Image (tube, rainbow, N blue to C red; front, side, top):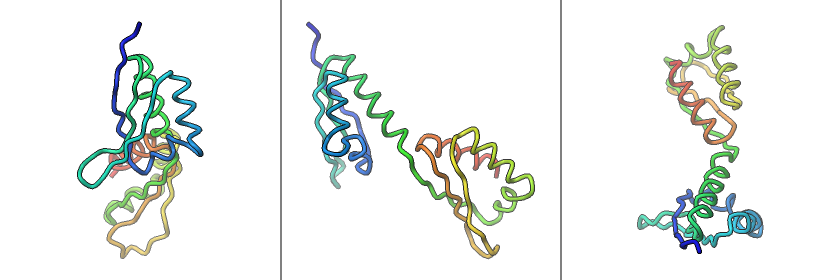
Length: 145
């Protein structure tokens, strides 16, 4: 008989609903697939983290942890990244759009930017895609500055 394990999977409060799903559908499927007991823990201002406590076999707990992390990492997000004015022209010159196309293709994100007058301190570039892909695109964007 397998020993029962208990692990905590931290999840930012804003993603708790995505993991749980409408009417608890996602979390119930996850419980059934991994044969684990999963309870939510709401974070608070005193430093307590939000997330899920998973109880079950070692393999079941690890599978549940991976599934929760996968769901969070593949959420479609929009990130607004400030770029200092002095670097904007470097990014948006004739060849600059090629930089964006390469980043978009490699990271599977969509990058856009507003029209700007040149007087703004920062220009905010918008990246849309999965959270992990947007973070990767953000790093590539910074490397081009």
